[in-house]
Amino acid sequence: MKKNLFLLGLCFVATTMQATVVNYTFDDTSVFPNPERGFTEELGGETMLSNTNNHVVQAEADWYFDPEDENYGDRQNQTLVMLMYYLGNYRTKDLSSQILQGFDDDMQILRQHGFKCVLRFAYDWNSKNDATLSYVKKHIASLKPHLEANKDVIYVLEAGFVGRWGEWYYSSNFGNKTQHLNENRRQVLDALLDACPTNRFLLTRYAMIKTEYFGDTQPLTWDKAFKGTDRARLGHHNDAFLNDYGNDGTYDDGDGNYTAMRNYIAQETLYVPNGGECNVEDKNLAAIVAQQDTTLAELRRFHWSFCGSQYAEAVTNKWRSNGTFEEMNRVLGYRLQLTSTLIPDNLTAGDRHRILIRLVNKGCAPLYNERPVYLVLKNEQTSYPILLQADPRRWIPGQLLSISELVTIPADIPSGTYNLYLYLPDASPSIAADPRYAVRFANVGTWDASTGMNDLLCSVTVTNEGGQGIEIQKTAPQVHKVLRNGQLLIQKGTDYFDALGRKQ
Image (cartoon, rainbow, N blue to C red):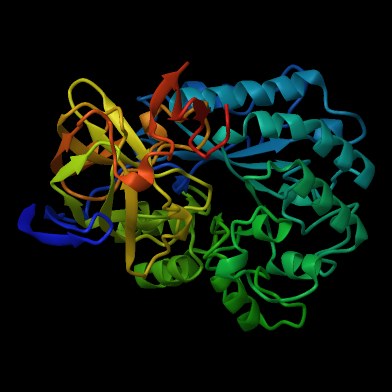
């Protein structure tokens, strides 16, 4: 860490104040867990659920979270699990209360272990025997309140339900793959968009599904992303990664032209998630497509945030032997790094001060789900988080990134010396206080695992002269941290808000 002192003119307070620049050391080698990104391992892949066998995670918890399991080492760097719920026993009847309870139980196990899921429902893995439209819509409606209740540990919902593996391909009731969006399929997508929590993404298997649903091939743009609309919430998944140029039809535009759809997905996935698995089982082909340069180029171009770690073994084993697996472990999703920080050395309670934090995203993708960003002033007695305006969903790879804001120092903060931290907890109140769900930056000496905060490696002196701030701030609400039943709340005046500004 290198520090340089210089004078910074702060035009807001019309004075010149001393500030410190902190330059950070990148950590480009470590592999560590971060929420909502990385490798996944599938659970439930050959389990047909029933009233008496109604769990996916609980049925596998003994080995999935067992330190003696051979794959346990890999899982120490994982935060996502791929969950497949096969509902073949309910093709012609409603989902039972036992099935719905089993799903809720599984979600609770994920919370206990600090995981989230990539979630899909289907009817079979051996045949194309799915349910009729009527029962599919009934099943989705039954699941809707349970998806909402457990959205804190759902990273993304994949469309599912239609066809073998829920991949919208081999289907008894919804046509073949050339009928990407016939009327029955459109109604399934309508029902899924309604059931999917409004702040979560629904991923479709083929690019054409989205373009046909909205009637054009214009990808999302910066100004339309993250608006909560159906178009902004519909993302993509690819279960034929690296399987020829078209990825086994993934990028088919209906006329056998894959280039247009590849360009479409490359733009779309700046704003909606993308992930999946490789299905190449031929060892000779795997030796070609699993080369590190080829794999990483595709991951980066299409902004992958998650990928299956097991299937297909011809490829995943090659990744392990040639070093690609470890590099993917680092760069799947986001990999944020602090570059430098500029903050005044002396702060006044109640006043506004300019902060500048420069950062870079060396991963394949941004974050996609909403997440607050706090600047935290912390000493041995307490901490004072200040909610920033920064939106990490906008921190896309390959651009110069910065947080440059005027922040109000809490009026009730006592005079003293405070260390500074950057804190990105989960947006869901149920897990916001759990450091396993907070974002870790890839720098040397900055991560505090006990709090989930990133140490900015600098301190400031705060002066409180009775809480009197500058003139413009006298009527502005003061902000400070309140913990209530494990939930982080922000107090503004006499009102309390959660991390996303919702009044409590």
